[in-house]
Length: 377
Ligand SMILES: Nc1ncnc2c1ncn2[C@@H]1O[C@H](COP(=O)(O)OP(=O)(O)OP(=O)(O)O)[C@@H](O)[C@H]1O
Ligand SMILES: [Mg+2]
Image (cartoon, rainbow, N blue to C red; front, side, top):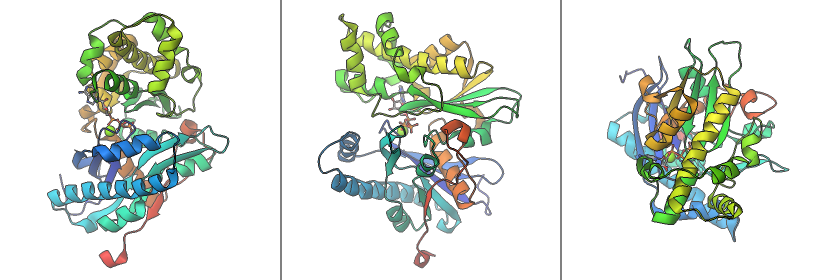
C-alpha cells in the first residue's frame, strides 16, 4: 500500500527482445512493493534504428547519438505518463534507474566494452528526477562481464528460504541466479544462452510475427535431434561461468549457419521446435551442472508466458517451476524493478555487482548519476 512516507524509485528496462519499454514505480521501505508498472510500445522506426545499430554499419556515431536522444525522450515520456496517472509527488521519487538499450555487448573483446544508450542527462532534464544509467561499465572496468547484474536484487528478494532456488529470467537471453539455502555458499549466476531471441527471429522471418504466442508453433512439431545436437555443440554452452552473451552472438545468422551445417533438409516448423528445445535444454543443462541442489525454479521474464518452453523446462529438469508472481512480483517487471533497486544502491554508494557472478576483481558501485536540475525542486 502507498504510505505517505514511502520513497519511490523508478526502474526502466528495454531489453534485447525490443518488445517494449517496461517501467515500474517501486518502494523498498519494508519489502519490495511494485506500486505501479506499465509496458510502453517502441515505435517501429526506433526499433529499426536500434536493430541497425546492433551490427556494424555506416555513420554509426551520428546515428547512435540521435538514437541516444530519441530513446531518452521515449523513456522520459513513458515515465512521465506513469507518474501522472498515479498522481505521485515527484519529489518523493528518489531516482530513476534506466538500464538503457544495449546496442553492443563485447565483454570478451581485447579492450572489453558494453554500450547501453538512452541519454541520462536528457531523461533527468525531461522528468526533473535524478537519473542513474550506464550500470554495466564499472563492472567491466573491474574486469567483469558487466552482466548479469540482477543477481544481487534476486538475492535480496528470493534468498530467505530453506529452499535452494534458481531464479530464471527468460528475456532475449536467459540468465540464472543460483541461491543456495546454505548462506555460506556464494551466490552465483550467468547467462545460459538464448532466451526468446532465436524463437522470435525465426518466426519473424518465416511468418512475419514478433513472437510465437504461447509457443503454439514450436509445440506443433517434434524437434530434430541432429540439429539440436549440432546447436548444443556451440562453444558458448560448454564455456564455464562467468559468462554473458547477447544478440551479436545468438541471432538469425547463427541459426542459418547451424541449418547449413546440418546437410539435410529440415522444415521451418521443425526448426522452431528445435530452437525451443535448445533454449530449454541449455537452461536445464546449466542448472543441472551448476545448481544440482536446486529445490525450485522461480521464473520471470517474457518467456514465462511461453507455455511450450516452460513445459519443456519442467519436463527436462523435473523441477518445481513457479512464477515470481507467487512472491508478489509480476514476472514481466522483475528486471525493471531490479534497475529501480540498483539505482537505490548507486545513490547509497553500495556496491551491487557480485564478483563471483560477473568475474570482476572487486565489488563496485555501479552506474553514472545525472542529478535532477536544482531549478526543478
Ligand atoms: N504469450 C507469450 N508467448 C510466447 N512468448 C512470449 C509471450 N509473451 C512474451 N513472450 C516473449 O517474451 C519476450 C519479451 O521478454 P522480455 O521483455 O523479458 O525480454 P527482454 O525485453 O529482452 O528483456 P531482457 O533484458 O531480460 O533480455 C517477447 O519478445 C516474446 O518472445
Ligand atoms: Mg522486454
